[in-house]
Image (tube, rainbow, N blue to C red; front, side, top):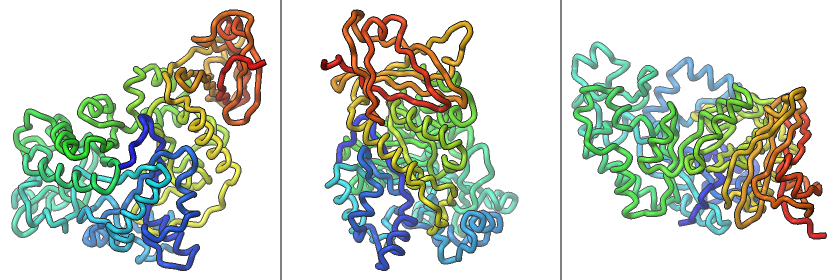
Length: 494
């Protein structure tokens, strides 16, 4: 097992699409055990701590058939990839038949080889787990009906979209409380003791093949959410919540296994308390995209210990591509912001090169798109520079940027600092489309005439300022629209 750092940088890869493109490039069949060195280099840029291989498990043939028959899905597939062929539609990676590595990806041996390659680079491996539901052709459906939310024959007749009659039992189709049932999955019962034991067993097995799991829609299994969704059909809620029971059992065998929750509805804190190492920070994502700098600043006033267990991102397979939703300059500014915040950081394969197509996860192929080499170079400098600096091993704090009565543009500047064994660092990001000026008072230089050297971690540019200025009125910053500073601050060696 590769031990991940306290605040890992994670790179999500659509496994099937990635392998298909390698195969097209090399002309040879490619599974996870056949990946050439240069392809590994592409998904493990310097500063990456873990790769999340999205979609390695055996997908459901029955679920794929349901997708192929869905006209709205087929239309969405063709919009994303014009001319997509039926054989290029693999089915949903979240409609899982069994937690076995798909044979077309190289099976368990291929995954083991991939993990060994990542481990040799000091990079960990994350995989998916879907706790809420399984495919209708999962062996559990016929072998363990006690694992599922049950219905009646009358339910199946009156609500066929919500219930599946297997011939031996009527089982609820999977859902969350705000949307209609999903037609391709069957609902597990989070309150059933047998299901909790089975979940722990599966996760314990997965833990032998990776360093951590990303748990899909983790909040759906929380006792109060599950009870509100299913009511009496789920039975009496147990005294202990789902995740403490399951995670506790898994960690008896894998104490270092990392658990990441896909989480929404402001339930991140509760899931952290229930055992998750990290939870999605969807609220920050929404504020960066749709709200202003002050909204982002308010979000960042939360306790640092809480923020260290969040996952910051600008895109993932569920969200539109950042290059499509953000102005290029704003995208860079936002990337600097999240790369220098506490917590885990999630990047999506293709984000570094400016891909714009939001690919449905059902597909094996994506359209060819030109690579933005300048954007890729920027992200390489960002990840590498932050990693080499060691800034995120210290203590983080949010700082104030003060303006003047006749110039309030400082309100658009988000400033923060790191202080620790690696040194002292300042980040200032103008999260607006207009120039901004202000003064950032730093919390640690000693007042006095001594000079300090300020070195930009990304560009190498150097500046000199006195301790009196830094700790008194504060460092003057003058940032262009979407401009940034990431500065290492040291006593002037001269």
